[in-house]
Length: 111
Image (cartoon, rainbow, N blue to C red; front, side, top):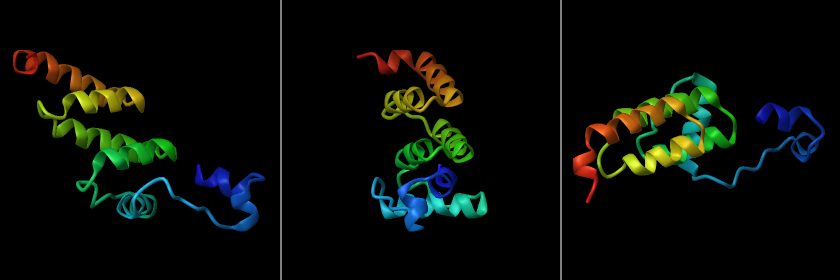
């Protein structure tokens, strides 16, 4: 997405500046760290926000990495939210992990 902003005839190309106002400073820093290093050392602060940013800015490798990490930390409290995010952001691996978790813990999840 950044490449498109800076190469096609858009405001960002003309000004040479990309203004990002749809995420926190911490999320932006984590996203930029990934873009420069292919590593993400600080996504535990708000992984759902970083997941959304990776989707919005079409950074598929980061989205996949965050999806895998979100799948490793499923709980009864967060599985429904993460299932919704996996569907919203088309992350099939996370969606499958959520569905498996729900089936395994159905008795605990149904009130």
